[in-house]
Amino acid sequence: MKPDFVFILENAAWPALLLDGSGTILRANPAAVKIFGPVLEGEAPLLSAIWSAENGLTPEQFLTQWGHSPAGAVALKFLVKGGGTGALLISICSFAKDGEKFFIFQAAPEAAAAGDAKNPVQAGSLAQKQKLDCALQLARTVSLDFNNALTSIIGHTSLLLGKAEPGHPWRHSLLEVEKSAERAAEISNDLAAFSNQEIESRRSAPGNLNAVTSRCADYFRNVHGATITWQLQLEKGLFAARFDEAKLQQALTKVLENAVEAVTDGGQITVQTRNLELTESAQDRNVQLAAGAYVCLEIADNGAGIGPEVLPRIFEPFFTTKGRNHRGLGLALAYGIVSNHGGGVAVSGQPGVGTSVRIYLPAETQLADESAGAGDNLHGTETVLVVDDETILLTMMETILTEYGYKVLTAGSGQKALAILARDDTNVNLVVTDLVMPSMSGRELVEHIRQLKPATRILCTSGYVMPPDKRADAAFLRKPFTSMEFLAKVRQVIMSNLAVDG
Image 1: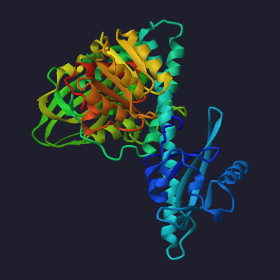
Image 2 (image 1 turned 135 degrees about the horizontal axis):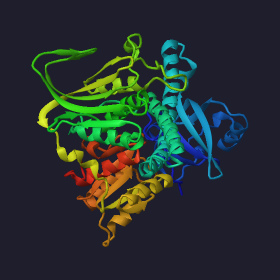
Image 3 (image 1 turned 180 degrees about the horizontal axis):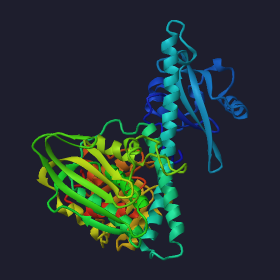
């Protein structure tokens, strides 16, 4: 019986095999089947089925020898589809799980790696591409596991911070834990960006900027409300704007973090949204605005301000005035996110007076859905089924939802989730499922739910892959997320009119 593995190389463009220590092939991706043939599609095929005697050693002898003296890449010969023998350069790595040893074989043509005499430049390029592809795949794998751990840490920590009084003796330590987890989340985001997980951006549905702004501001007010005066001035009847909610929230968080760090005790931060209609082009500092409709979010503080020698460099990656422990990516990240939405970020400041950050997003003159801002009350009484193969995430989401009044059911796999949904005595209002799981993926689970109980609402979560279809953005939450982000998204999906296919 094959173990439950999420084979991260399943969709790789190059052949990849997962083997146990005895040489049994546990997983073969489609690219491998295409080269080696249907022999890999049988039940527990052996490496010997595709192994050429020209290698000189049996598969078992080779694996034992490789274990004593590992090599990053080995030239081997295999029996390929259609008969005959093919030479491949195999990149090998091993790992242990539950006391057992496993191997991953990844292949590229030997000629490409060793150098084709007729075209050595092209051959070298192909070899470099294989190395890069392997690095990208490793980055995706690390990012996936890292995100799962961070989601649990940030979820539990933000829940406790929301409950702790300003003078609670553990509050400082909780803030330090959260700060460390957020820094780790930045590293995870860097890995995700490096691995190029999002090949193309998709057009989001019109959203309410007030809802995201209010949620971010409320979080910082809960944490810093005792030392900072907050003013929230949200435009009633705000225009609708198209944005990726998770990314925009990340940008707003970076700007608010800077504002909080700039003010001293007794300082003030004002958060304001407003509509803007331009009949002709206009400019705000470095931002050129064409004629049209916009929503503007302004975050202003009366803190230390920004000097004229620093202002031109504030969007430079890795530029910071906060010391060596800061990475200097906050405003650069916010600028990149807003720019990718077709908007702009303008900053003005004066030493000793304060700083104002204005975010402009293209808008539609139709009014934003005010119900999207109904995240003030995050409590609920509905039944939520949480599905994830990571126990730490099941526990974290169950804890948060139960604390806010929900009835929670949990399942560690798609099969167990379907068994719960099939019971006559179970009425589930929302299914929260991870997209990457062994045996049955979240995508497959969504399709089964559509057939079994089409009226059930679904919220997909992942730090690695995107939602099952283009209409699922409104029911998708990227890991890692805070408890407030999770609760707000759960409430939004339950209260929405989304069908299960959207």
